[in-house]
Image (cartoon, rainbow, N blue to C red; front, side):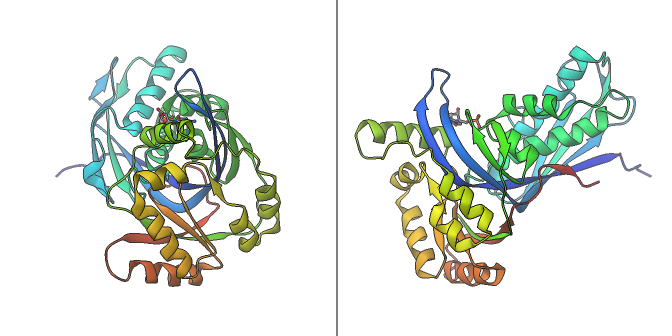
Length: 322
Ligand code: C5P
């Protein structure tokens, strides 16, 4: 008889940027951002399965392997370049350095993807945030729990969007996107999301924006969010629709003209507004209600060329589910 090993599972949520203003390229290779993030109920799950008690290591990675199922699974790395794997390593290194962790039981990571990969919806960041939460739950059973400030610092080291996916809700992000302030937002917003088979690389889209600005073919940074802040307080999706903005939309459209064709199709189908999510290529359509979002999506997916889903926000940050 095989004994089932102990598992811990956490969920990490996708995000859309209701506003994404991109400033100058900094010496460290990042751009200054003003971003308004909203988490969505679309999510991935990350499960850590503990190896038998005798399978322990005192140095190096505790991860014995990583497997991926679900959407775009074949394009997700299954080695230590995966952000979830790096998140577990980072947490273990912290406990080794600060809390005398000598030996740790090895773990296998299983990720189930509901968020598209390289789609501009922070799928990799959501996995990292969920892996941090799950690994922290395991390690803090015997060792001191870490403060949320420490976890957020680790999250920022892993990637610019990881702190937000850890926290969730609706937040203003500044710096490279990792410095967060909660924003007041009333109501629930319903989205129709259209995914593309081929993803877009985030650094390539940022570089394209810099190149286009140099050539004068992309507008300068738009960093004000006052109109959007007021709209979010109204709880009225029509007001919010009028205040959505993404500086990365112009370069994403330039790299992938099919994105603009889809955005127009969504507006023709009756969406309040359509925009590229983050660095794209996912196109997010804000709708009046869940029913409206379903109608718009049905229209856009009718010919079978694209996939997509409806989702709503704001949703939670990364959290344990079992
Ligand atoms: O932080 P993260 O590793 O997710 O960023 C991926 C890439 O996106 C960076 O290497 C950089 O090219 C670009 N980026 C940027 N400015 C930001 C965030 C990301 O240029 N604020």
